[in-house]
Length: 340
Image (tube, rainbow, N blue to C red):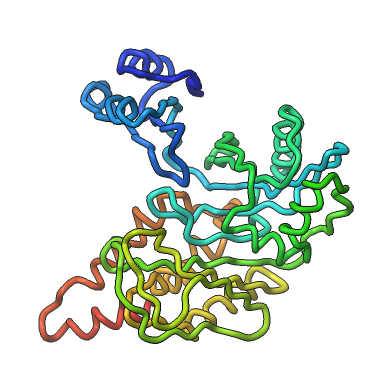
C-alpha cells in the first residue's frame, strides 16, 4: 500500500498510517539504490522528520509506502522487443544487503515457494506490457515470510548483478540490449542451468559496520579457475577516495549447483588479496558459512532477510574485531581476518 502522489507534509502520512499501520517509508523520487528512504515508526517521528524540508529544498518529491520489515529481495531479469516478445532471462535473489545496498546476488533465486516463479513472470510481463517497454529491464519485488509478494520498482537498464543471469543462461545481455534497441528480435532465451553467485568487493570494513576505507591499493590479486569471472574497475596502485561508490570489483562464481557455486566462492575469497585498503571479503566469507544462507529451513525456504547482515552478522564481526586484552587480542584479530 502507498501514495504515489507527492507527499508534502505529516498529515497525509499520519492519515495513511492510521489505515495501514506503522512503520511507513517516505521515499524520495530522486533517490535510488536504497538512498533517500526515511522509515518512520510513530506519529512523533512523522512530525519531527526533516525529510519534507530536505525534499523541498532539493527540488525532489516524496512518495509513501507501508514499510515491509522482513522480506527477501527477489527480482526478474527481463527483456522485451519491439515485436511484443517477452522473456524472463532468470530470477535473482539480492537479499543480502547493507543500508539497502546489495552485497551478494545469485541466480536463479533459490528455494522459492511453489508457484512463485509463475507469479513473478506474469507480474513482470504485465508491468512491461502496460508501458510498452522495449529493452532489458529488472523488475524488483519483496517476498515476505508469509508468501506475500510486493512490487518495488522497475529498473530500465542493466544492473550490477546482471552477470549472474548471463552465467546461468549463456546469453550476452549487452548484445541483447543493443539488438532490441535497433529493432531486432529477442529470439529464444535458454532456460537457466547451474547456479551463479556474485560477490561485490567493496572498500568497507566489516569490523566497523562497513565503514568506508580509503587509500592506495598496494597489492591486488584476483582469484582464477573454473567458474570464476572477474569484473574490476581498479588496478594495483590506484587510490580509493571517498568521492565515489565503494565497489572495486565483482567476483562472479558459477557452478553446476548452488552448493558447488558456494564452495567455489569460498575458495575464490581465500585467493583474493587486496592490501592498502580494507575490503569486505571477511563479511562474504562469514556469510558463505552461515546455515541461514546456505540451507533452507524445515519448510524449505531461506530465512535470511534484507536486514539480516545488519542485524545479525555485522554486530558479531564488530564484536570479534573490538579491542581485546593481551590474551584475547590475537584471537579477535583472527576471527575478523579468518571468519569461520
